[in-house]
Amino acid sequence: MSRASRADAARHREEVVHATARLLRERGSGASLSDIMSTVGLTPGGFYKHFASKDELLGIAAGVAFGELLERMRRLAEEFPEAAQARDALLREYLSVEHRDSPGTGCANTALASDAARAGDASPLRKEYERGAAETLRALASLRTGAAQGEGEETDEALRGAILDLTAMVGALTLARATGGSKLSDMILQVVHDDLRA
Image 1 (cartoon, rainbow, N blue to C red):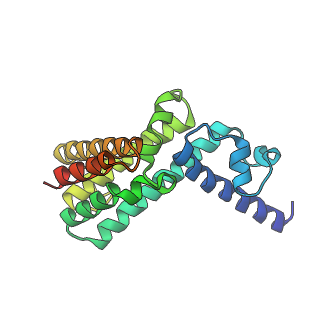
Image 2 (cartoon, rainbow, N blue to C red):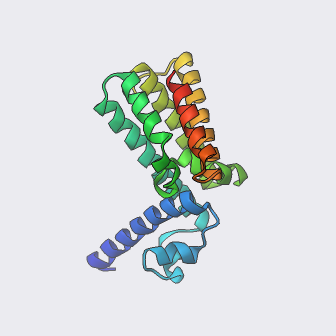
């Protein structure tokens, strides 16, 4: 394979992974290989040149989706050196109408929870979800304490607080999406936002 062909193959693989990360958050794991490949202008027949299975791809794509969230949290921690301000900024973004209405670029914890729960224990999607959820909790604990992500161990109190934050945020966003753009949907986002900031 020529250098140009290898570069094209690597680029196509990357495009497929990122398209899958978006589709997985929008539609769940039921998106077909045909849907995934056509999103990036490729035919389904080329899929197995890049991946051993759809399960493998879903695991990789879930990792990308979690990576986007963790990167956003890291940037907020840099932008707002005060832990309380960084956490408030995250709550504003997470519990917003924009986030509710943009599942394809939204939080993997919310979008992938049902698919991960239904996946087998050994599935790449389940494993990646477990890893991503744990990393999200560590990042949230860091936002609560002001420690840089990955710096030392989080305290039990910070971790407990992070679990409460994440479950409230995921629950609120799930209910807000399930009730569409209704008054109730907006109210759910606002009430949980206000309660978490209190």
